[in-house]
Length: 186
Image 1 (cartoon, rainbow, N blue to C red):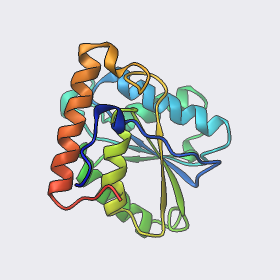
Image 2 (spheres, one colour):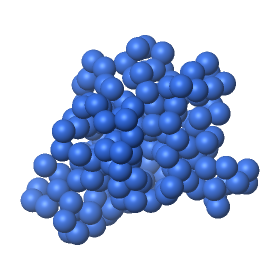
Image 3 (tube, rainbow, N blue to C red):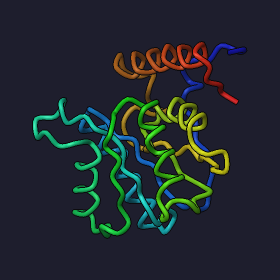
C-alpha cells in the first residue's frame, strides 16, 4: 500500500460542478442513511445530479423489512424528487457486490450507458473506501467524484468522540484489507 494512512486521511472530497449520476451508498444505521440521501437530494435540487442511483439491501437488518435503496427512494419522493430521477439497486449491501451490480447496470441499461461522471455519495468516513471499490469495478470511462455527506462523523469531528475514533480506525483496517487483496488507492 505504500504510505500508511492516518485516520484523518480517510476523509476525502473531490470538487465537481455537476455529474451525470449520483451513486448513493446505503447504510444500516438510519442516521447515516438519512445524512447520505439528504446530501443527494440537496445536490439534485441544486441541479448537480439529474439522476440518483440509490444503493443497498439490508432488508434483513431493518424492522420494516425494506431495503436501504427503497427507504432512500421513499425519502427522496417525500422531498419532492421525481420518481423518474430515481433508480434503486438493492441486490446487496456488501460494497464489492454492490459495485459489481452498479457496473452491470452502467453497461447494460440504455439510460445509463452514456454516464461519464458520477458523484459517489456516502458518509465522510466511508467515501474513500467506497471510491476505491467503485474505481476497480466501474467501467474505466467513468470519472468518480467522491462526495461526503456533510453531517454525521466528518473530518471536523471524528476525533472528538469514541465512536468517531472507532469508525476511523475501522475504516483504516478495511482499507488495508482491500489494498492487500488487490485494490489500489491510485
